[in-house]
Image (cartoon, rainbow, N blue to C red; front, side, top):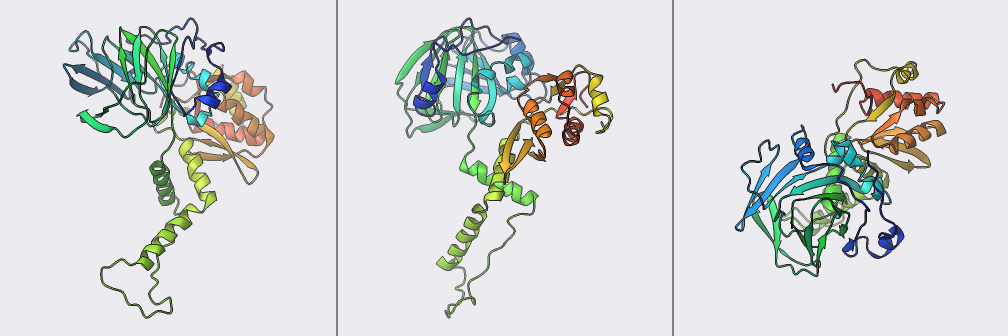
Length: 393
């Protein structure tokens, strides 16, 4: 598998975080020296056919836009130019592409969303648009022109029901990227990219949940866990006034009561922390779990590991750690696990930093405690980690 490293002569992480991150766009010439595409156009088309993969073909001809959701098996109907194939989360379905995310781990793992890969014919693009996430776009084969403007109040248009574009942005940055070049575009900056030749681009996106998404997660969590069940109470009869209900009029006292009820829900820090950790440790794309043919027992997990050379991480699995009242917890796909001792913390940290597979010898050398063995057994039985010879259930 190829290894990708940012060119330190072209990209200084500290300088970037201080001066550019979420502040302004930036072109980084030769961010990757001797860049070699980790995936070909044919391989990308193959990934787009796999179950659960989100892909689109976007085309434009004479100002008319079209979008077709994948899987697309036949591209012969498309012209020689003016279209793009975009495939989401390629890192989760094509292991060699995972290596292209590694250079960006100077940012928190929980911020990383996915690696989107696009193949474009000459003139291919998706039109001028806004993204609500930060993105690094790496130029693979070919050349692509990028135009970027400043944040502002732009008119949204939908030339296709599933395609949002904007009108009226003026390019303040207009550059052509060559293989190995990279562009950083913060959230909210209008931009448009157009391929000048047949080309492949790699977009590493970083998620940032909106207030609406956080509140939605809070509501879902409350409904699932019977939380936030305190209900509104009328103030009529509970004060010294002689006020009577006035029909269908919603008065200030009632509104204040509802507002306070909502504020109280948002003042429960313990509950909010649980919701945030659950949300950020879940992949919105369901991970591809692989369960063992027979459940593994804690007493037999070492013998189980000795039978196989490695454990694979389930595709799309997300993990993080957090501290609550001085206790370290690990979260996997929204599930919380108490890491009760140093051994279980060591195990979780090792698995957290292993993004594809881990040699079972590395696990057996840890001298795992009973708590750690129990944790590992549960992970295997949950399908989070599986032996490489197992078939998907």
